[in-house]
Image (cartoon, rainbow, N blue to C red; front, side, top):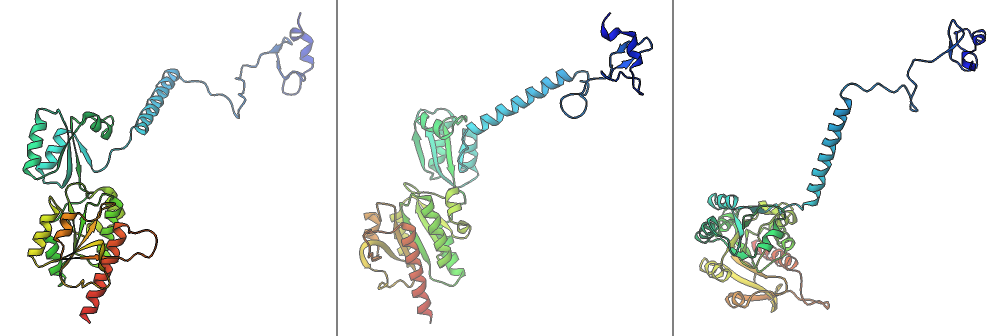
Length: 326
């Protein structure tokens, strides 16, 4: 007979009817009784019984969590598209039909079918069309079905030259326009727009090719000035200069070997030509300018950032116009 079956154990019980040493209950026959209550878990409290169907539900929960984790990983792995980029044949077609401002259309070189119709629409609307290899579009639209067509749209609609002249007339001022000859840095363009707004310029003109357009980066760099300064995009900057001169606007190109800007006459209807990074003002536009002005440099660097040069000239124009009114 084992110890737990010893009838004499019933004599060694406490007031709760349990054995004093083992704390087990003692039956009428003196034998120790097994505790039928569930054993406590190592944590605080008792372990709850698993409800029916819990295994199946738990498996479903784990599957859902795993699927959500895979989706999140895939989303993090895919780079975000440029907010100014629309892809696919139908979206690009509708953008052209709606008259939305489009900076450039990229088309796969061997694209067929409706792509040819898009190319025809682009030419009819005077839009810039560039043919590229499929690999270029794949890199531009990673993991997206571009169908051989993509387009960069402007963050804000472009204006017309008449809008600039109307803005000057509404303020009772002579037109002050900034012509950007091949500016490619969006931060520079945004800074120029900011200076134009601060100095009271009436608008900016940019070329359609080999120059930055009104991208989201430009909008951010302008600190909101993009909403108040009209921007005109032209196919030929030289022809635009001719049109401005026909309307009585003087053209002052900013270059290194010109007259000191502080000595130049910068009152009256005026258009300032600011060259792009590295190249400066093109020879064609320079030849059409009425005069050349320069900013003297006293250091070892012989040129200024395009947006800095624009700011200096714009505030000099404002200074001279203010003095002329007094």
